Image 1 (cartoon, rainbow, N blue to C red):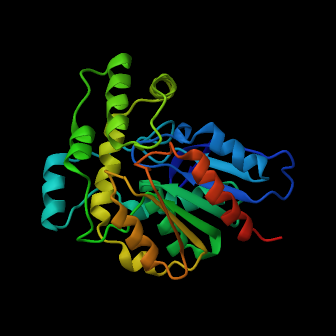
Image 2 (tube, rainbow, N blue to C red):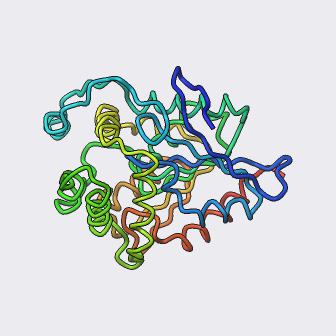
Amino acid sequence: MKVKSNGLDFEVEINEPGRPDGAPTVLLIMGLGMQLVAWPPEFVKALTDAGYRVVRLDNRDIGLSHKTTVKVPNLAWMGLKFRLGLPIRTAYTLRDMVEDTRGVLDALNITRCHVIGVSMGGMIAQGLASHHPDRVLSLTSIMSTTGARGLPQATPAATMALLKRPKSRKREDIIEHFVKVLTVIGSPKYPMIEAETRQRIGEAFDRSFYPAGTIKQMGAIMASGDRSNEVRKITAPTLVIHGKDDPLVPLKNGEDTAKKIVGSEYTEIDGMGHDLGVLPVLIERILPFLRAHTPV
């Protein structure tokens, strides 16, 4: 379904529990360049089976949501300015994406909800909890960061995997490319099942393929810079989860996030990289946290 927010159209999917009346809502926010279908069905089912209403959205410039007409930023130039600590100007920042998300809640008449975000989605979720604390029952920030200067960046291998282009825009080449990316950034103790991964990538490609959106979103992250002061204002009950073997957003980013949110709970997962392959462990950790902070 489409909803209007912040002047843009957003694709939203809602999964209801067996007894939807009065069910608390969990909002899931995906990461850089990822569509709402990237949330594992097993995770969505675990939440609905536990009695939660699950709302997922495609962020702007990705999936079936609005594709902005702004110029695609020069990634190399933008990356150089970011490394030098120079200001970066883009058409929108993470703050705009926070307001996108808040507007989706408004459109769906959701007053308060649990918010779970991964990677860039964790950054957006942090912003929602900081700027709209009355809307957030709890925050779960997974493999994300505050963007603070001095935090370790992606490993050279992870950076090269992300920056390398596929052979062509053909379906089979895109699938092959993303399998290689996930092999580099994924969880070493929880390796992907390649056949299932190829199927999911293919389905995502068939649904929408817009690589320019990933670059625009990357520009939003870089232009947002250090969000430490924003993160320090979060008062919602918070769970920070990070993988010990994350090559894209290294572990110290999770440690830093947890330190800057007073009273937050922090979980490091051995063998977890930058993916959701550790699903049973995540479910085992997240569900009790949600229950503890769901009003009776």
